Length: 133
Image (cartoon, rainbow, N blue to C red; front, side):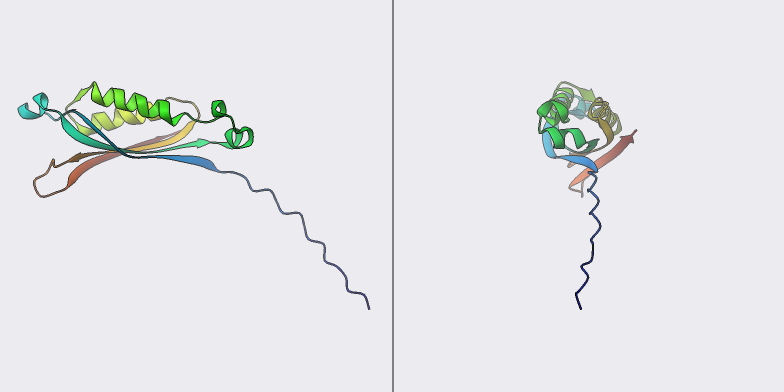
C-alpha cells in the first residue's frame, strides 16, 4: 500500500507589525525648575523615548526615504532642550512628545524625562507622557 502524502497548506505570510524606535539615555543640560537657583544654573536631564510607526514600506524598499528619520527627531529634541528654559518636567516632556509625533508616520510616542538629583534621597525623578493616533 502506498502512503498518501499530506498536502501542507501554504504558510500565511507574516504581517509586519509596527517598528519600534528606542532612543535611550539622551543626556543633556537645560534650565529646568522654578526655584531661583534652578533658573540660573543648567541641570542634567535624561531623555528616553519610544516611537512606533508602520515600517512595511521601509522594510520592503530598504530606502531611507521610506523610514522614519530618528536622527532628525533626536536633533530637534536636543535643540529644544538645550535652547529652552522650563519650569516643569511635565512641560518639557509634553514638548518632546509633540516633537516625536510631528511626522504623520508616527502612530505612538512615549517620552520619559528624568531629572537626576531632584529629590534628596532619590537618584532621579521623572515624568512620562505618551500620545497615539
